[in-house]
Amino acid sequence: MIVIGSRGSQLALWQARHIQACLKELGAEARIEIIKTSGDRIQDVPLSKVGGKGLFTKEIEEALLDGSIDLAVHSMKDVPTELPAGLILSAIPEREEPRDALIGARVSELRAGMKIGTSSLRRSSQLLALGRGLSIEMLRGNVDTRLRKLDEGQYGAIVLAAAGLRRLGWAERITELIPQDVMCPAVGQGALAIETRDDGGLAQELARKLDHVATRAAVTAERALLLVLGGGCQVPVGAHATVTADGVRLVAIVARPDGAEIVRGELAGRDPKHVGETLGRTLLDDGADVILSEVYGA
Image 1 (spheres, rainbow, N blue to C red):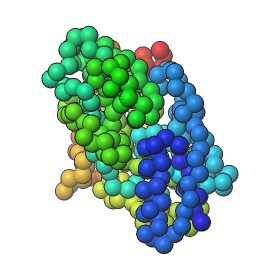
Image 2: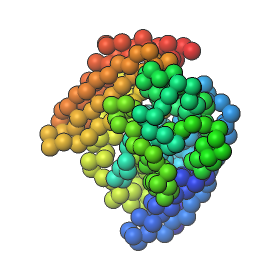
Image 3: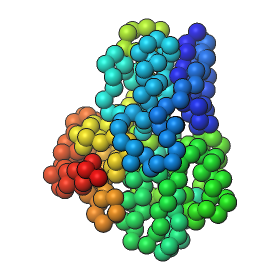
Image 4: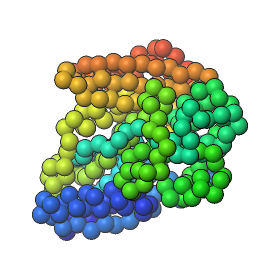
C-alpha cells in the first residue's frame, strides 16, 4: 500500500485523488494521509509577509523523510527550487492551464477603486502595473471560500489559478483567462509535483511512470530561472515556458510590488535548465536585482 501525503484543502485532495487513481491504473493501491502545513495554519497574513520557503511543503517533506508517507503530491508552484537531501521530484504529470483567471470582471472592465482580491504579490504587482487605480485587498483561504467572499460582494473581482478552478469543476466561474502579456503566471503554475524519497523504492519507480516529458522540460526552465533569482513562491516573479520543436521558449518578469516597474525578458534554447539560468541572470542585470533586494529587505 502506497501512502500519499497531501494537504487537506479541496484542491489538494482532488490532486491527491487524481494521482491515487493514476497509481491504481498502474496496479498499485494507495491511501491518502492529510498533513497540515505551516501555510495552512497562517490565514490572516499575506503570504509575502510570512517569509520562509516551503510553507506548503515542509511538513509533508518531513513525513516523507521519516517514512510515514511514501509519496507527496504538491502544486508545483508551492515547491521550493531546492529540495531536502534525499528527496526528488520523481514525476511532473502533464500540465493543466497555466494562466491566471479573473472572476467577476474582465480585464477591460477593471476601474479605479475596484476591490480586487488576491494574496499574491506577483498578481497584485501586475494588476497595479495596469495603472487603473485598483484597490488590491488580501484574499486567503480555499478556492470555495474565496469564491464565496466574491459572491457576498466583498470584492469586485478576484484572481485565482485557472488550473484549480478547472480541476474542481468550476471552469464556468472564470470570467476571463488573463493574457500572459498582462499577467505572467507563477513558476510551475498548473503543474503537479510528485515527490518521493530518492531511494529506488516502489513509490519512486511507480511515480516515474507518471512523468510528462514536455511538462518537465517547461517546468525545469521556469524553476532554473527562479533558482538564479533566489526567489521562493511568494516573490513578484512570473515565468512561463513552452516547448518548441527546437527546445523551450521562456518568458519571465520581475515586478516592483507597487507595479511601478516590471523587468521583462524572453529566451529560447535547446537546454531548459540553461535557458532558465541564462534568462535569470539577464533579468538580474536588467534591474531585477534591485527590485528583489528591496522585496527581501522589506
